[in-house]
Amino acid sequence: MPTQGTTKVEPVDVTDATFDAEVLKSEVPVLLDCWAPWCGPCQRMTPVMHQLAQDLAGESKVAKLNVDQNPAVSRGLGVQSVPTLLLFRNGKVIGKLLGAAPADQVAAAVRQRLQDPNV
Image 1 (cartoon, helix red, strand yellow):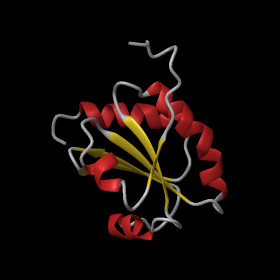
Image 2: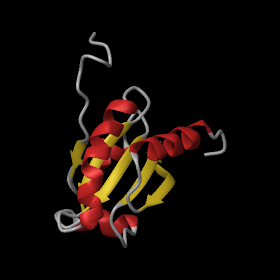
Image 3: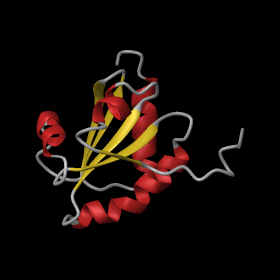
C-alpha cells in the first residue's frame, strides 16, 4: 500500500446523483466544498481544497459540489452563499465554514471538530 507522501490525493467531485454514496454513506468524515465557477473566492479555494485533500488524507475525504450543476443537493443543504464548507460525519453535518480561508485554518477547524466527542 502506498504511503501518503507518494500518492497524490485529489478532491472527489460530487453530484446530485453521487452525493448519498460519496458523502452521506461515506465510511470516513467528508469535508464538502460547495462552490460555483463564477465565484472568485471559490476559485481561490481550489488549490486550498487540493492541499486539504493531501493534508487530511486518512482522516477525512475532501469533496467538491458545483452548486450550479447540482441544485437539488445544494438546495437540500440550504447553501445560500459560496464557498460554503460543510463537514459531515455519519451522514450528518457537524461543522460549517463560510467563505474562503487558508488550508491550515480549515484543517485545524476540521481536526478540532472531528475530535469533539459530542458531535
